[in-house]
Amino acid sequence: MGKDSDSKHARVTLAVLSVFAGMALFLPGAKQAASAQRPMAVPPPPMGWSSWNSFSNTVDAKVIMDQAKAMVANGMAKAGYQYVNIDEGWWLGQRDAEGNIVVEAKAWPALASGERAGDMANIVRFIHALGLKAGIYTDAGMDGCSMYPDLGPVYQHVGSEGHYEQDFLQFAKWGFDYVKVDWCGGDKEKLDPAAQYAEIARAIGKAEAVTGRRLYLSICEWGNNSPWTWAANVGGAPADIWRTSGDIVAPIVPHEKHSGRLATFPVVLSNFDQGIHPEAEHTGFYNDPDMMVVGMPGLTDAQNRVHMSLWAISAAPLLAGADLTTLSDAALATLTNPEVIAVDQDSLGLQGIKVASYGDGLEVWTKALSTPGERAVLLLNRTGDPATIAVNWSDLGLTDSSPAMVRDLWARKDLGSFNSTYSANIQSNDAAMLIVHGSEGKLTTYAPAGADGARMDQEVTFTHVSSRVHMARVRISYTNSEKAPRFADLRVNGRSATGIAFPPTGSDTTAGAVWIEALFDREGANNVLSLSPISGPGLSIESIAIE
Ligand code: GLA
Image 1 (cartoon, helix red, strand yellow):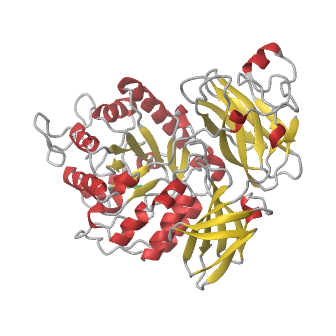
Image 2 (cartoon, helix red, strand yellow):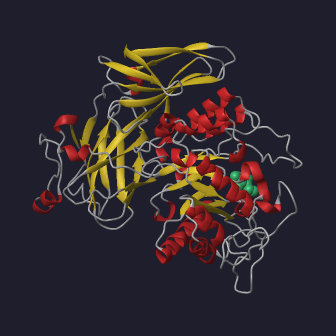
């Protein structure tokens, strides 16, 4: 074990490794190379739109074309929204003699000359031509959710079980960039989701190798089997999302039989709460509290802003579910606020955590951002009355002794410089979304225990670790000389592992850092953190630093 102050932290290079193989590898007192603190950008949560909430299984090419065009015309694409995701209802369960999916020609016609009706590549080309990306949907089981239809007839066998490699290759060849894989069939058959989704991820990997393009995986088993304990890096992908709760709303399709349904604020809050698993959200892997209902019938403008703030502070995927052709100005402004989106998309990729609560329902949430000293802060009032909520710099891991600048992200206005604390009066069921920019608190640096600690051909352990807070931010300094991410399983105090992705650092002498959040639940310096390699060579762990 080595422990040192942040500024004096030592660095282990591969050169040192080769000279001192078998000896203690930490060089106490050596000056830490600045690069060891260089945060590596990780893939941000996806942004886009999905057809389910507003179109249910009435989705077809016309719906998708209209939505894709609206996403560009209304400024959402410019604000960062890019995926146009076709959810359930595009396929009716028919396969040909070779097991290929048969697509309904009428719903998915030719869109340009030379195209064949019933070819999903048509709609993908249309979406891509607008500079957007295309998403598709299937189920991990034999049947899909169409066996319990929200609208229209029952369709059987709308799932991919038995055809994983064939279907995911087909999606990739059609040109799709994203696939959501539901669990209705898997659930019915009582399959093991961790095993099925790993098999799906492997099928996706094979399809990607054929087409040379990424097919992003969105896992949708509603949090029933704690996907945050197994879904990060399932099957060795550099980024994935997994649902953490049931549906945020049942579809509201105008002129159909459920058109009077409403989205509700309590379900928005409940999905947010169920999506908080900060220890699993890191390095490009995200908890998914479901598509947003901003702009759908049911929420007030203020509730839409709180909803967007909750998704942004938790770095949730920002997938709008409203009909983009009929968005109100207020809903559009909420969905496209660049400062709120920037919080969600911040390149550290960390989830917000609750750092203070006062009584029942007055809460302070914070998300560390990539600019040193910057924190997004949400002051959330879940109660029925207005209340004052205070945030203290010390709760944010910022130094108490330095003043911090405060900015209101919805008013888009600087509020000034404050000493050690800021408080605001928050209306009932409302929130303030802020950036607090102060001075970083101290981190404590640890070197790997034992001899060959830093080399990732074996487990690397950090012992006698302590932290100021239970859920602490951890900076892992490493090198990855390969061109692709490398992966390692992290365990804290022997708990179930989470698969961390380490983006390439350029060389084995240039270090970088990724940030994670981990629960240090043992008193004093009794915590143990270990990293075990789960991919090929090239990764070397130098040190960790903990708040
Ligand atoms: C499930 C999912 C929803 C949607 C529907 C489609 O309920 O959770 O997001 O995909 O299936 O039937």
